[in-house]
Image (cartoon, rainbow, N blue to C red; front, side, top):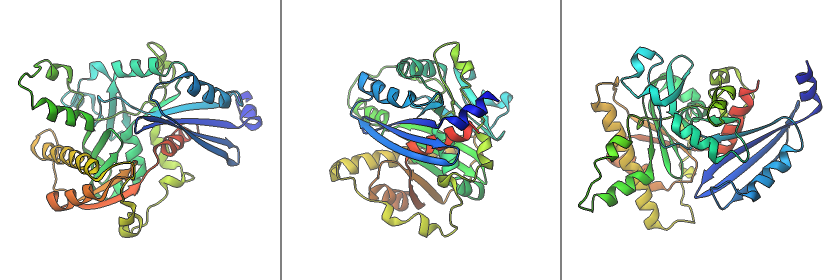
Length: 345
């Protein structure tokens, strides 16, 4: 009862953090019972939580007792698997070193316990309420396409690719890949010595992602409900980003959405897009060849673009893999704010 009175008297503040081009973007949304009353965004040219960032966030936390801080899971070793059956999970990843949650009792997403502790320490100066999986963001962003299509669905971030293959809402395959690791591997191939221990380090977590709602260090992980009930998103119609997508794919996924970022040279774009293409190509090959997965022939790919990719990636996918490519821009901080708001309903 008191909580209802409090939410009537105070507005809510959603503080959403995303990383792009080596900088932290902090997106603020203030909401009262009637909806959005104010939004603001500020970019900090660092990925470390420094005093300037703490002071910026504290200025909003002081306005109301109802504030919530969210990020997209930044861990490299995270994944998603096409089952929620615990007896089947072990053939996809090591549950003993990970934390997982099921999505609508159809598939599961996970991240390493070690990375969760590291994230808790890294953000301890401000605290975290929600850590969301890129796989959940992707599933909700393309919800009506995933529910009705057999296709690849891809989230492109600055340093990561989140790849999933769905067939009428059933996850078939998923991977979360670092574009930096791919570049480093190519550099390592030019040297004579290989570190045989690298394979041991990467364990079974090369698959994909996890939806973490709230994180703190050590025992506080469970108290903060790290994995929220994201399946409740199905009932939410108010979120504009998750509204029904027009069946005319060509209208929504306009070719005009693909353009060059002025901050990069053509050569940099070529290298980055070609690296992304190679990662996608290898992932699809794994899907076709690994007997763990129920492989089916894929003819299309839907891309959620958070960084304004160039037209080259589209060309590579069309010309080398013969895929139909549809691209839609995504603002990650807005999406995780939507997820946080749904978690609190």
